[in-house]
Image (cartoon, rainbow, N blue to C red; front, side, top):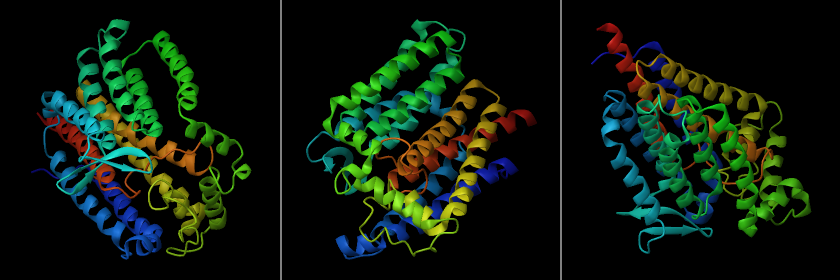
Length: 368
């Protein structure tokens, strides 16, 4: 069993470091609310540690497996992903929370299928585009991946979860560009997507309220604008150096979902601007290395797989930070590797394991 190269080791170390840091921040952000609601200040921490341990195991296992096996399993993975997305609407299996059906409970364990769907899409897109690269410039060749992406987006949007739908759409769009989609088709699909956004917002009254809250959160400080205002208070209170680890004030039930979608606000409050910059640099290095692995891959499939993993991390990172800083309307999307959520951290780490496998298999071919 050969050792990791320097690139692979850095990818592994940064990923684990982000996940461990996530455990620390999940505890900090949730200890008060967990004690208040569940009478156990470690409630969210234990769940996060469990997800991280499984994630490290999955990442290590997949790193030493030939990633080409995913080509053979692409339809199985896609069908499982679709099946789980359907199960969220099935009584007994589906778990509703805050008016949304986004979780499935199987054998007492809660799973968020939309997190799995992101990487199922990446695997399918990488398989399809690598085999159809010489035909992808025709519109006909674009129909299958668009149909698969559209199916996943439809199942996610009716949960409802517009944020994950946007993530899936962006990843699909960028992977098609990397796969060789023409400029003409790029412009057409960009226009269609831009036109779809206001339609989706108008389709649900709560999204329109969030849009108004984004434009002027202080108009409804106790309503739709409350969460964004509290997020901005947290970031502003942190200043350059922060108030200190575990010293956040907003986590005392002022900021909703402080341990999940808005954990970056708590990071900004406790570690300040410089702490946020260091965190973003870690993300930047990880994404850069994943793209580097993709560019050095010895086949198109490996290239698209690694780049797809980098895209999911990058797109979700940008959307999450844009929300907590008030740059786009509020919408729920976890911060990769850090936000509370066992499914999310485990699946993201597994995705990184696949990228490491791409690097290792490429290295083997060079040595032959």
